[in-house]
Length: 318
Ligand code: ADP
Ligand code: MG
Image (cartoon, rainbow, N blue to C red; front, side, top):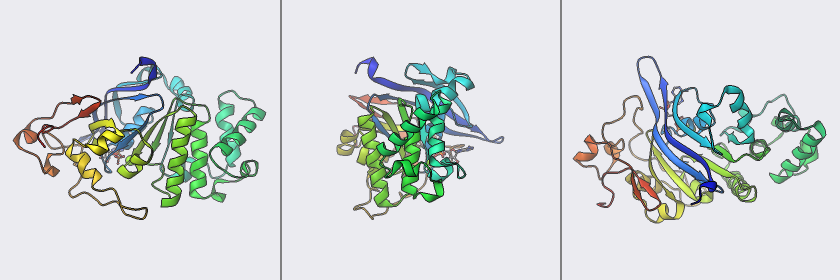
């Protein structure tokens, strides 16, 4: 893969929350690379550190962050607050789960969208034109009329479309979407995922999709990173992971995928450990049917097999 195709590189990322009496190690030494046009899913159960990872990538995380976050050749960790503000939206943006909380309830949709442009130097008339065009791009009917609507006049799905419009307005290199469809109805979910997939293609964006649902990841992503207890335990191409999951946690997550549209995600037995005091050795060992002595004592080292990365002592044996 040519260097030019690399949009983002994350190296040894750690995010700790200092709670006084204890330290929560929510992200504990993570590496991955995003290439142009990638839709990279980060999948793991609730409490794995996914949101912490997403927020830290755009420098919005309140925790103590260390490591390198290189986007478009720039290490975001080295930028000043002023520089990172400019970088947000123009190079990297984020979409959250709850569209209502991301919109200002007393401002019209159009004003909020136009602001993204005017803050970055566009004239009002240009901002208006681009905003209308964007609303059409994200599939909002009667875009001109909708510019005058307040958030509460839109459905959840439509609000999320507006948020997506704001996130892609300035043609960023990387869009992070943190559970963007978890608050929506199942049918709307599919539409929003499709929209993200199409935009990734047509805009040449790269996307990081954070989800607890392997089914959602399979829907639109080409690469997957499986996260467990602050670690990335397996990374690879979607098809290869689905046809041959190597980490026991990946396998376990795959058994949770609901069958059919209305199916519910089955919870896995056991729970994600307390990240201020994770188990020794492999963090998954207490829940792993394949664990043996070494798994309880030694932390597994990352193993690279072709395009795959796996963090498991027992790869090749199971
Ligand atoms: P996920 O998105 O995978 O559910 P999170 O990143 O939200 O995981 O949480 C990972 C761990 O970090 C959890 O133990 C959570 O309680 C903790 N955590 C998340 N945000 C904060 C915060 N602002 N302050 C302290 N602890 C936090
Ligand atoms: Mg989360």
